[in-house]
Length: 474
Image 1: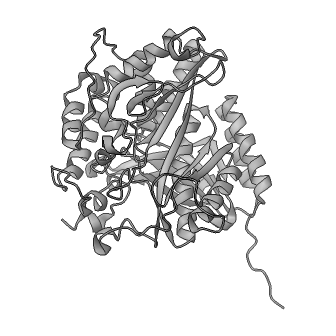
Image 2 (image 1 turned 30 degrees about the vertical axis):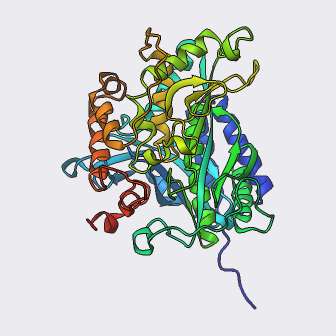
Image 3 (image 1 turned 180 degrees about the vertical axis):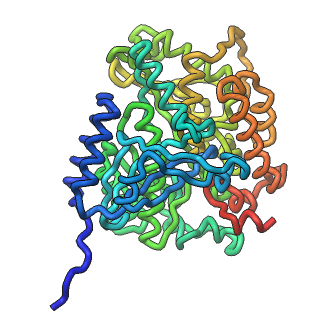
């Protein structure tokens, strides 16, 4: 008689959604960190069917890193988790490599076992210095700290939702094999809204949406996008730190689901010549003591003076922060006006070529939408930059009819970024210098002039694609 030797935790999707929404609600209600920590540790201790805890963190460029800890080891060592920071690009130097990894118990997720394996749970980590203070290169901690300060000081809550586009290509590891194969292969060429229910793209979207729903995303709608094999899976607004985590989870889910289907989910901004690129339109609003401060029925386009100040501050620093929102060589291909590119530093309710759009809204939904941001941006750095710039950045008093456009190459964006006193103050001198150096190192491996066709170098050395082997092929 066969004996089932393994008894690891597997939770039905309906129950997963219930658990993850409960955890999300605790976070939204700002339940004390100590209370949540106590609950999670007790749960892990009591639930014998959990074998491992996946702890993740994000590097300076926005790449997600994950470590699996044996559950028993983690519970014994939770206050003394360390890792080698020198192995992460943009983190500590080799001579000072050890960094600590704290646990943000509020950002705890139960995982669908058919996608991620049984017996595992997922939690976001916080990179720390040896003394336990937040690490300077951890933009997640920076965003979280700023959001908490705003809430405690003025009762301000930052709300965000991201419309993240991506491409689905045939084969596993299609990005890493790009140079060898000479390109990507579409899974279909159906286009906007045209995929049939049994089409590979539709099956991928359906499965990814199921996983998102189970992980508490509050799904809204999903569909194929304009370009062949392109997709978008939309979900609802949330508080800023949750929204940033959900960007990482969205890409993680899509990549894992695609891998199971022998496909690759890619978030390169412009992976294929001659078709629309992928963006990450970022919708934002500010609530103060529960009231949307961006709404004014009598304001221009329904936006309040506070909302317009927020927009104008972002536009004033549009060139300065462009490298943060468009962080790769490939992202400047997307800023092409021939493909509905939002490359004009202006705001409009109707012109989708504008960097910022003012969607139709009411007292509940009034918001601003930054359209120039690419899906490969560091979500924590990007949301921190947009929020702090919108609230505290410089604002130009000059009125001009001349429309300035965003750079069409990364070198100009790097120049604008490094010359900006504002961004240096925003990020701090150390992060400002490290980030610019990382971007320049990748840029120098690609031709300065982009040309008409995508080069393998801009794929191979992309911060979400490269590995040690690929980086050494230069």
